[in-house]
Length: 227
Image 1 (cartoon, one colour):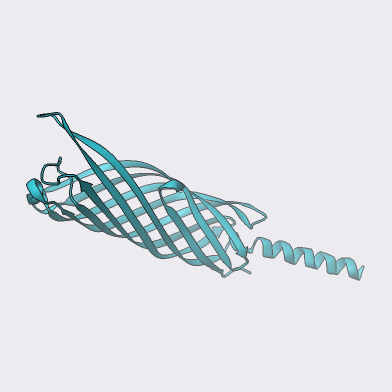
Image 2 (cartoon, rainbow, N blue to C red; image 1 turned 120 degrees about the horizontal axis):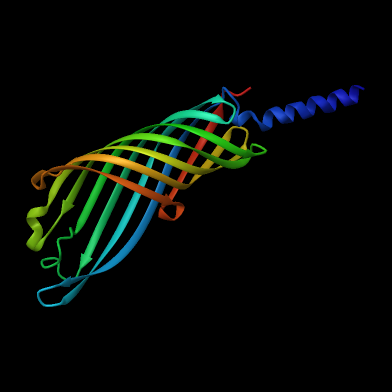
């Protein structure tokens, strides 16, 4: 009888530990970070003489920032995050003085704030998926540098962006107090307002679908507050 009680106590403790990371009242504090690089090449046709010119581009980006979440119910958390993002695009052409208006360099820097609510689907509370809605505000600056015929188009600008997203992440808990997640996919819609110096002001909207192939996005977080 005593042995059976000990076994039951151990099983109950193991069950409690295995569910501690995503149970109601648990909190997480972590760091989001990511990086990506892509290249492309396209040909420009000059209709006046049917000549062609190759324009290549390379885009690099990275981001990082803190995040915090609180589980309002088992496997359901709400949270906030801050993020800094930097993007640089460089263009190459045979003759920038005669190309179709591409800048030699475009850079963008943003500060983002977001709130979110996420649902977790876990296997033994060790590995699984989470999905949820994110609502973000972004404030950024950008700079475009032109040379040759289009040098007058060089400008500095600002952008204010409002975005709603649905995200899917892979989540893994290597220990009771440590979690890691990786972005798999996201679907988003944004509305922005921009000022572009001598090129004037504007606003618009954008819809996007992104997958992990567009860049690596990770989060590492510490779990606390659980029983």
